[in-house]
Amino acid sequence: DTGVSQDPRHKITKRGQNVTFRCDPISEHNRLYWYRQTLGQGPEFLTYFQNEAQLEKSRLLSDRFSAERPKGSFSTLEIQRTEQGDSAMYLCASSLASGIRYFGPGTRLTVT
Amino acid sequence: GENVEQHPSTLSVQEGDSAVIKCTYSDSASNYFPWYKQELGKRPQLIIDIRSNVGEKKDQRIAVTLNKTAKHFSLHITETQPEDSAVYVCAASQNEKLTFGTGTRLTIIP
Image (cartoon, rainbow over all chains, first blue to last red; front, side):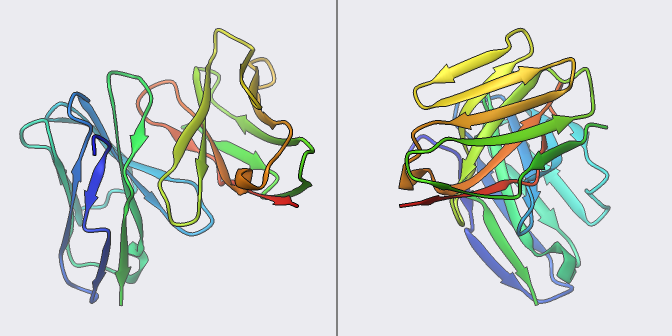
């Protein structure tokens, strides 16, 4: 499968726990994006990377959120001290330059 | 920042009829306008996109029109089929930060 992949697909965690999600972009894509989507809404931009550099972060990305793309390939998104409001679908997308963004299947996070 | 509004939120059309979904944007600098189809619980998939240097783009039964003066763009689906039932989400950007609308749930009535 040469598309964008995300792991895990589902995560249930208790409030206060830390969680980490992984995204593997399409191999030649240098740009990687993280979005969050709640029910009935369109995706909301969180952050993006060009290669290993994190170039923009949304105000939605509080201090509890951190994202990395250490070698310019896969990326991780960590949420510390999860809150119930963090429950959402976390989508990753990748693109070549400013081309079409291809989305992964998402990680559905449920905080209980 | 950019703000994208999408209407209607739900739309039901008879199979074979046309469906039109409209989006407005606020940032006149936006120059890229994609439309995504998202089936329940699945990833958004690009169905068509348009850049600001053209006013219309068509791909078989799907077309997008752009009015830069009025800052709105529309998705047109002709000869609708049951498999067109899904949520359609528009977006606008002039840089890497794609701003999405809230989506339209399209239902095709057989």
